[in-house]
Length: 156
Image (tube, rainbow, N blue to C red; front, top):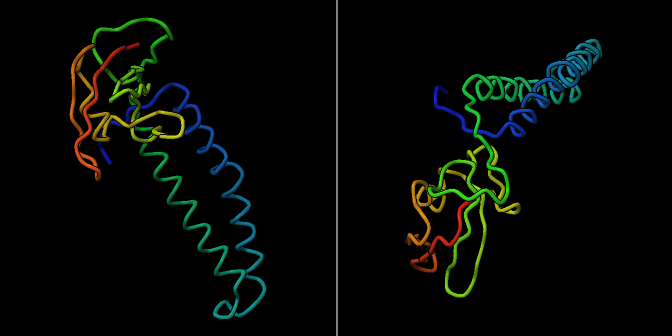
């Protein structure tokens, strides 16, 4: 993967923490478990060996993925709360209105998106369409229920 990975400082720290935990704790434990299972005899009928080998392959894959992410990470400068902005960028908190309903979203990179926390990816249809827009701009998003129109009412 040579694509830029947009991430906040906090998100980057969490990825580094996960990488460190996998490399220094979980992987060595699995290697030890695998060696113990291998010493139990016939590998063809050894469920513990197969499980440990599969888990190690999964962790090695996750370590590789994290290393790619960390190598390609580009920090998003998070905006201080209450500081107004004119244009929606990565890290912006955007308040939109659709009908009578108001919602606020923070635009983040895809690795940090979490709809439950109102963090939407810059790659999502809504996030992509909000980028570069200003207050009072309207955008339309095609949803399964039809078109939804959002009006930007605040940018922080």
